[in-house]
Length: 65
Image (cartoon, rainbow, N blue to C red; front, side, top):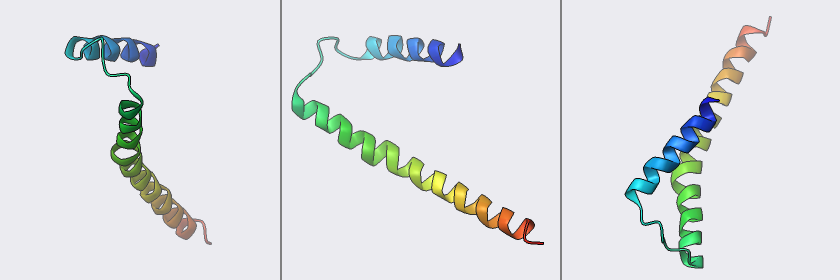
C-alpha cells in the first residue's frame, strides 16, 4: 500500500508547484528523458555496481575455503 500512497501524495504535491497546462512538446519530452538518464540513472547505476562488486569481492573471499 505504501508505494501507492506515496505515488498519490507525490502527484498531489507536484500539481501544487507546477502549471497543469504544462509543456507537452516533443522537445520537453526528450529533455525529460535526457534528465532521467544523466541525473537519475547514471549515479544510481554507479552505486549499484559498487555494491555488487563489493559484495561479490567480500563473499568470494569469505566462501573461498
